Each structure stands twice: as C-alpha cells, then as structure tokens.
Length: 444
Ligand code: GLU
Image (cartoon, rainbow, N blue to C red):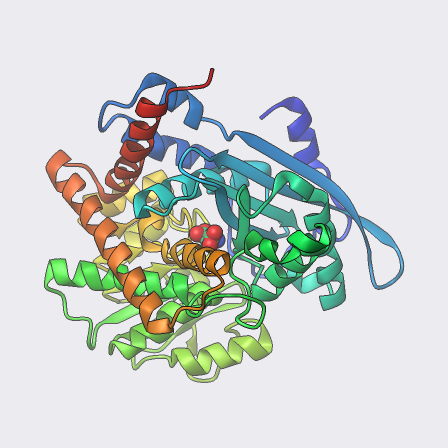
C-alpha cells in the first residue's frame, strides 16, 4: 500500500469508528495477503501466461471517495467509500457494496479479486469489483443511511454504469440500499435514457425491478453446493447436524433451507452471542428474533455458551457465513465437522485451512460455495435488460445447474491435479481468463 493510502486508512472518520460490542474478531488487512497466497497456489497449478499473472496481481482501478453527509443533528460528517474494480476482461465489473465500520482498502481489494474468479468459475459473463463504506449501520438512522447511500452513489458518478460496473448488496447492505442507489443513478441520467438504467445495480427489491429468488440466492447456492457434495460423498443430509456463524441474509437463508432438507442446526454465533441446542434451533424462529432484535442474543430456544466453544460444537457440517479470517489454528483444531462450506468470503486463514486439510475435512471454498448471489444477480441483470420477469422455479433450476456444473469442474480439476478444492476452483477460473487473454492479447 502506498504511504498516502496508509495515511488515509488510519485517518479516523468521525462517527464511523465505533466498534460493536462483542464484534467477531477480524483482521481486515491480513485478508489481502491470505488471498494473494491462495491465488499464488493456483498460478502454480498450471501454466498461466506471465502477463496475465502480472495484470491480475492488482486491480485495474481503485476509487476512494471522502464524502460529506448531513446527519440528523444537522452537523456534517465525512465518510470514506471505496469501489475497487479488479478486472473486466470477462465482462462488466460486478460485485457488492459492503457497509462496515472497519472496512479497509486492502480488504475491498481482496474481495474485488474474489469476484473476478467467482464470476469466471461460474461462467457468469462479468468481471470483478467490490465497494465499501466505513460506517456502522447500527449507529446511524434510516434517513442518514439513505443520505449516505445517495451521496456515495452520486460521488461514484460514471465510475459505475449498467454496462460498466454493477454494484449489489453485501454485508451491511440490502435491497433497500440498492433501490436508493438505483434511484439516485437514474435521476442523474437524461430523461429518455432513465429507464434503461435500472440494471445499474442488482439485488433490488421485487417492487423496484429485482429478481425472484435474489434475496435467498447466496443461501440457496450454498445449499446446491452442499447437495452436490452430499451426492459425491454418499452423505445423507436428512437428520445431519450443522453449525452456522453469522445469521444475516446468507446464514439465515442457508439455515432455513437446510432445515427443509431435514438437517438440524445445533449451534449458531453472531456478533451478539453464541447459542447451542443439541435438539436443534429453529432457523425460522431465530430469523424472526434476529429481524426484531438485531442479533441472536436473547433467543429463548437455546442455551447461551461462550464464544470460544462455538467451533468445537459436535456437528457434521460447518457453515461460516460472517466475516473473513474467523477460523485460525485454534478454531481449526476444534472443528468437528467433516465439511466446511464457505458462505462468507475468506473465512479461513492459511494456517487454519492447512490444519483442516491435514485432518481430511472437505472445504468448499467461497468462490464456489457462495456464488449463488452473483449468479442470480446476473439473472436479474438480464431480466432488466430484456424487460422480463422470470419465475422462481426457472431461477432455482438455472442456479442449480450452474452451481452443479462449476462444482464438478472444481472437483475434476482437484482430482486430476491432486490439489485442494480452493486451488482447483481458482485454477478453473484462471484458465478461462488466461484463454481470453491468449486470444485477445494486451492493447496496444
Ligand atoms: N456480494 C455478493 C458476493 O460477494 C454478491 C455480489 C453480486 O451479486 O454482484 O458474491
């Protein structure tokens, strides 16, 4: 990171620096290093053109904006926002916008790169990008959040566009955030072009041009990955147990869909607490509780345990669906599950992953396990472009097909080349990108 950027990073922005009580531990800057080591292993798994390696080592564009917002008290505060565009060789930049009080440039850079490989792996014709705003969504009012979103969108200006860079929800943002972004962007365009701009963002509400199935898409994709794994391993999901870290959009949908398959949630953790019940916790009831209280804390149908005990809970499947770098050496040693599905981006450290692999635990990596979100974002984008509205069953069918196809490509590469699933997933994606560069060359 350049000196200037480092200074920007350490600058404290008023009102956005407070930390949540009991917040899950995180090391945002370390994440980029972990990602670089992961991708390095894939670069070594087959022959990549040297210039492709060079090009992909950094994002194409790094946009940082400091923007003022009028707070409810009347005072103005500065917020810091990022949009990192990693690659558009496979199509328009694509990726979510994260609202988190500790978001950093390096974290967003790693997340943007993950999007490039995720889209390439799934054969979604998009590139990779990610955005972030340093804000604690629990510290601001709804009106403030709207003004933050609209001003950030306005300041991004033509750095985003429906055929250029298409944001989506991520941690801390949702369909409402996307609708504000869309409305702001549409209103900055000329009148006759306005309605062609709807697909500037995906993950919108159904009312404002969103797609059926988008809200549950990431969780649904996790389930399709689990079903593929269970088929391969001859594992029966009905009656099996699982634990989930993070009970936001992704964790809660994955859990609700797991219970439809007869699987039992025995442990759950988020930034407010850790719960255990060997008889099972109802994902539906917990979800209602989280919606009304903001976290799992206070839910009556389970025993409260200490956060250190979470990873050691006896279970068959483990679904990390919170922040990155949650599973290090200590946690990896405790995990009892035979498979981990990375619903979150980058939940394992290198050392944590090594231990799990040595112990024979199956790891289905983020760019595979959580790709359902961007796949259905792609469906939303096509529907907007064609003024169509697809049925949920068509969307689920297509998503299932795409998840299954990529899962099997990943597993075949892993078997044939005797590498782990993460290396294989990155390698399948890299191969596609490499082939395109081989044909197109580099301008001029
Ligand atoms: N934020 C999600 C992800 O990390 C979805 C991105 C999108 O739909 O563009 O994959």
